[in-house]
Length: 419
Ligand SMILES: *[C@@H]1O[C@H](CO)[C@@H](O)[C@H](O)[C@H]1NC(C)=O
Ligand SMILES: *[C@@H]1O[C@H](CO)[C@@H](O)[C@H](O)[C@H]1NC(C)=O
Ligand SMILES: *[C@@H]1O[C@H](CO)[C@@H](O)[C@H](O)[C@H]1NC(C)=O
Ligand SMILES: *[C@@H]1O[C@H](CO)[C@@H](O)[C@H](O)[C@H]1NC(C)=O
Ligand SMILES: *[C@@H]1O[C@H](CO)[C@@H](O)[C@H](O)[C@H]1NC(C)=O
Image (cartoon, rainbow, N blue to C red; front, side, top):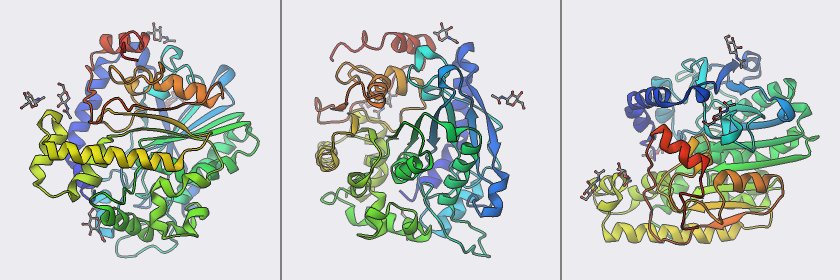
C-alpha cells in the first residue's frame, strides 16, 4: 500500500480527464452543485497545518430551509504516508500534502447534491468537505518540525481548527450533525467520531457514517504482520497515540487502533458502516501484495474480474469470511451496516454510489444506500444488512451516461428486481 502515492501521481492526468468528462456530461441542474473553498489562515499560529506547512481548508455549502441548523462534515480520503520519503513524495506532487493547489470551486454530487430528488436526507443541510493534507487520517500531532524536510504531522490539529471555525460559523447551534468520510477519511470518521460528538454537545442527534473505512486486520490472512507494521509506522511517524481513541491506544500498540475493529466497540456515538465484502482498495493494496504469485496476475484480476484464477478467487472468499467475522465482533444494536459485494471503493460522493446504488442487486432489504442511512439516522428503523448472496466479488461498473444514471436514480428499485 506504500505504492499509493505513486499510483496517485500516475493517475493525476487521468483524474483531470475524468473531472472534465463528468462536467461535460452532467445536467445543468447538477452543475449548480458547486461549493467554495475557505482557508483557515488563523489555524497556522496554532500549528494546525498541512504536511507542507500550508493552512487547512474546507469547502462549504450553506444550509437552507429546515436544514439551516443541520451540519454534515465530510473528511476526504487518500491513503496514508508511513515515512518521511513517502510523505515527501506527496509534497512533491502537491496532492494530499497541501491546500495550495486546491481549486477555489469544486463540483459535487451524491450526498452533497442540493437537489432533493437525489438526496432526500441531506439536500438542504450545511455540508462541508475538509481537505485531506496530513497523511494520517486527521489524527497526527507532532510538535517538532524536522528542519531538513519541513514536514508537519498535524492532522489532529487540522481537524480541531476546522471544526472550531465551523462552530463559529454556526455549527455551535447545530440540531442535527453527521461526521462522514471515505477511505482514509472513512477511517478518520471512526477515529474522530466521539471527539466530534463532544464538540457539538448541544446537538440533539449526532451520528457518524464511515464510507469504505472498515480496514480489517485479518489476522489469519496473508500480510497480517505487514498490515500491522504499516499502521504502526504511520502511528509512530505522525505521533497519533495521543489523538487516537484512548480506550484503544491505552490498551495496545496504538498502530493497531487504525484497525476499526479495535475501536468501534468502545465508541459512544452511533456509527454506520458502509462498505463492501470485496473492497477494491483492501484487496488490491492491503491483501494482494502479500499473497504469493506474480504481481501481473493480480493486476489482471483486479482490472478484469473474469481473469481471476481459482486460487485468487479462493483468497477473496477467505477475505470475505474474515470480513464477516470481523463485522460480527463489532456488532451492536446502534451500529448501522450496509455491506455489499461490489468490487469497488467509496460511495457517498458519487451520484450512483449514494442514491442509485451502482448496479442491480446493490439494494439491500429493498433499500438503497441513501434510504438505509436516512432511516437509520432518524431512528425510523435500524439497518444491518450484508449481501451474503454471492461469495465472489461482482463487477458493478455502470454506464456513466447521464440519462441512464438518472433513470436508475429516479426509479432505483425498478432496476433491482432481485431484492
Ligand atoms: C512504508 O511502506 C512501504 C510499503 O508500503 C514499505 O516498503 C516501507 O518500508 C515503509 N516505510 C518504512 C519507513 O518502514
Ligand atoms: C432535480 O433533478 C430533477 C431530475 O433531473 C430535475 O427535474 C429537477 O428540476 C431538479 N431540481 C432542482 C431543484 O434542480
Ligand atoms: C463563491 O465565490 C464566488 C466568487 O467569490 C461568489 O460569487 C459566490 O457567492 C460564492 N458562493 C458561495 C456559495 O459562497
Ligand atoms: C467491469 O466491467 C466493465 C464494463 O464491461 C469493464 O470495463 C471493467 O474492466 C470491469 N471491471 C472489472 C474489475 O472487472
Ligand atoms: C476481460 O477478460 C475477458 C476474458 O479474457 C475478455 O473477454 C473481456 O473482453 C475482458 N474485458 C475487458 C473490459 O477487457
